[in-house]
Image 1: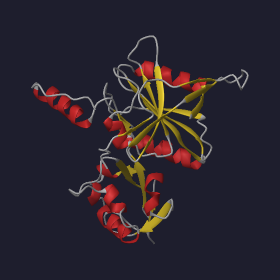
Image 2 (image 1 turned 30 degrees about the horizontal axis):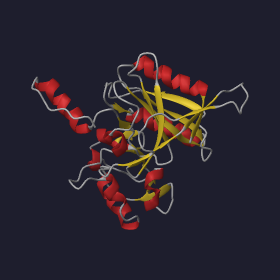
Image 3 (image 1 turned 180 degrees about the vertical axis):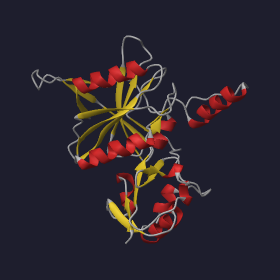
Image 4 (image 1 turned 180 degrees about the horizontal axis):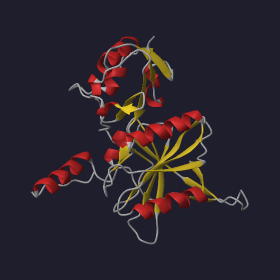
Length: 116
Length: 162
């Protein structure tokens, strides 16, 4: 048995157009490394250079968001189903500004704000 | 060009007005490959913010699975800007992960009028497109087309964030 991985439209260029691929691994990290060996470049779209899961994607193991399961350390078993979706987010302000506002609210200090 | 029923546009505007001054967001699903937005799905803004929106990841999983089961895709992904123009921000562009979708923005900064604009966002490149609003039950050829704004139709933001 293997782990079924559902690929979103935007990443199907890495899987030859396939919507579902199979892989193996004890953790999400291992699975993405395994997938990258056959679908070169896929891992780089999901994991940052710093080695964390990208903010722009949501990854689920069965029905759980992996951010609640240890992210890349999430444990996998044969027969699990992994779903990758593009995170849908945005808004009027840039991230840096949003972070600065949050910081400002948290500390009461003035922070520079730029419109994104 | 985005062609969309007036009833759906009205429902999106009502959602944006209801959640104002927080940003509202949602999806209009349609049959795969049809480019026809037919099923309006208002989504929760998990960020509950005046300047940021984010789909709740678990609600998104449910909705995306449901679309999959019904052979649908997200034809329109919409959100509101509540104090600024209906134009994609850098954040909008860096997150845009559905290359086939129309990104619809509604600005509710004016209390009496809404600005509604639609964009394609592919690989960090924003292309504005006209919005054609279809009036059901009226002469199907009697349509209203409009495109707001004086900005160029294509804007290339080099920092796509990917």
